[in-house]
Length: 553
Image 1: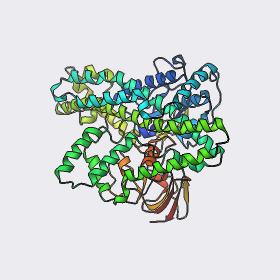
Image 2: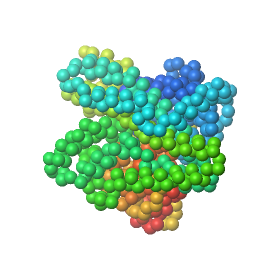
Image 3: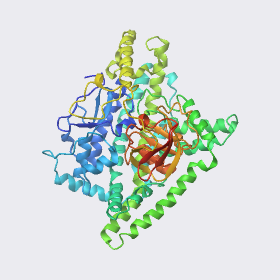
Image 4: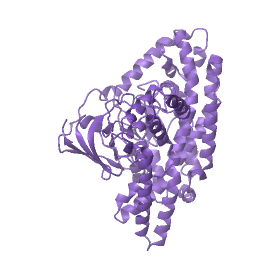
């Protein structure tokens, strides 16, 4: 074990990747996260797979992580398990899963069938589930999402006054949320996995008829994408006088509705727009300089119109094949439900994590006052089993342990984690430092190839932004070049002329949101933040996934 958070890895399912999960947990996870809702997420994921018929629960170990894992302090996804879902699902494959969820993964081995992988009984159950997927045509058809949304909003509306609660009451409040987190995360994985079904059908038909250019337009402009909603609200605020009462009251409403969002928002120790409103104010300020033509709602309407045209075009090309036509029509129809549903389930989870975070922040404030913690966020470095000691007569005994863990966390955060490993990860001491740049920068005329995200071509000055906290160099029309994107980055898409991301795949956050906002986007452009010179004039081709340096800075 290289960190106190590290878990065992699976012998049955040995392939682990940072792809996709690197957007969720870009930094090392804290002991608190690992010991509380990360485990609940593991169990919820298993329950989602059982619910859809892909796996039986006894295929996973009882008391050890498997689908999720932590190595060198960083969270990993078990790609072996997700690939096996693709192999068991009728009409899918491990390659489809790789393309939709992981994108480019240098050095990853091909899938090799193992004993127990082929399960006709489970494939038959999955076939029934997939049939149900095609029957949903609106996000409102997915009743659990609506219920979860109402319940998480109610928790925020009825939040108790944490300052009036005892330390133990605050702890018990956080623990009371864990069963609901398991339920929400299970729904998130159920929906996220099944969202790949219509995408796979649309992609397969478009490729078969020689029109892969229609794939991206058919996944854009679907509407009801929760993670795009803060950008719409921020845009409206950016049109107001920041010193006026209308802005002040509007921003208060914004924080109530979207305050749970922020960088690395799945991690309880991280700041959010509610805990640090300046994070949101900076993004609004960047929008303020953008012209009216950058209005994200107008772009969304344009993408919706393009989607209608693309759908009609692709359907017309298979009119002579009734079976394919019917399947394609069903996939296009149900994608309007499943693509935004993925972001809805994520938003529900993030709202609950905020309610988990806020009591801990009150505890952190108290223990700073008592000189047990050095900073409020030190609550993240307390192990779940240490809470009795924390609330006992000598909590100061934890202080040095917490400092050591914080130091180790900072040390690991300075490293670039191994992207893919089989069995066991390498020692983090051998990982490259983030401050080292061994990648060869692009020269004028050279290109980097990534994965097409949102259609369109744009040219602008590349602005390499490594932290969504500090986007001040980004001007309207610039091309945002980022290492990862989570919803804290989304508002920066609005003034940008294009977006380029180091990682990502067809169902990654950057693609879903850029498609909704109509911003040309390329993801899985490996080492783009290290290879594209800041200030260079670049062309982003969201149709082909190519980023070209036109002029050096």
